Image (tube, rainbow, N blue to C red; front, side, top):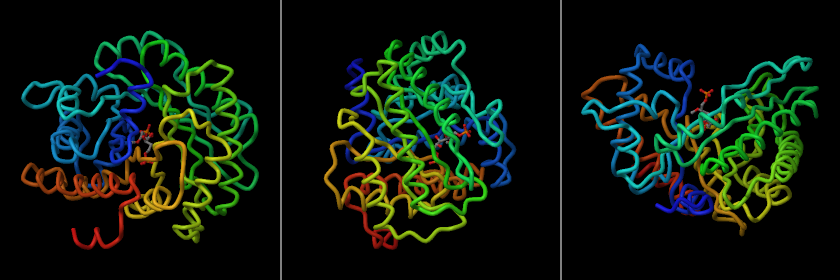
Length: 341
Ligand code: 5MM
């Protein structure tokens, strides 16, 4: 594969394929495994992810890249093959989450800033040697009656830009993920409030990327959709699609090759329906695809349940969701395909 940033960015956010976000940190994967009654150990985490990466049909046809957690990039499959090699063998690109998580922002009660810039240059060099060709950093913005503050948005956007510039210096494509939460507390905000905050966040992020001299053609954006809070869900599929596209057109330069959404707590089918409606209904300068965590994995996790005899069932569930989202990334999904399956 070409090592040019522009080619890697185009390869991980194409039409008809998308990214599997399997970069749950230790605490998050523990929650996921707890939900199916499986203890989180290095081995169970490995087994779960090996099941995903060995779902050949899904990986070869519908998945362009996989975001990994540090532990996973260093792990080997049960037969000794590095997990990153399993991914590469399917034609997908291995990527790595490099942020250190969202931590309380000093003097800004209730708000967070993502940490992890110290030593990042050295870590990126090591990740490149281990085979990662793209990275991810997530900044988290919560909506409440009084938040977010301009200061917290600025701090998160600045960190995203410094991260992105360091990635490109290392020959790694940055996925820039400023997430305006739909599932934060209280989660009662309207879709219009989400629009307003998302617009401000994206404008600030692109101003910071410009100041940091980030090459947008070698960058992928991973935004939230413009959607109402989890406790106030009312907006129709058409409304989410129209407002999301309008907000992106107002803020995202056409030089970005691809936009890969997070699912953010939407149901599996909602996340697919929204993506498909955008691609079917609007002309856009960028490819619009998925970089889902929960919306690609929830059904698989449940079908597997930690039992070796359920590996094929888990892989079928993952393949189905990956296929539905791949169709959505070309605007070709419809609800009857879910029923047919
Ligand atoms: C897979 O979850 C990712 C890691 O989360 P933690 O750092 O909290 O463990 C997460 O960043 C994910 O890549 C994105 O938010 C998209 O995931 P969803 O589930 O929202 O599609």
